[in-house]
Length: 68
Image (tube, rainbow, N blue to C red):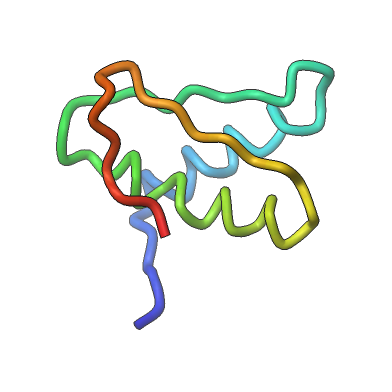
């Protein structure tokens, strides 16, 4: 089943994309539980790995959600 981003998630994804073209090449999505951070990060990671980027995902809680 295809993922469908909400308008807010799509705007957040568009905001994050430029972060990965600068020298830091890092971004930190934040928000309360259940707001779609993992759902948003998943297509971003898929796009980066499709372009042969080495990608690492970290969580401040030590309890990450499952990423595809």
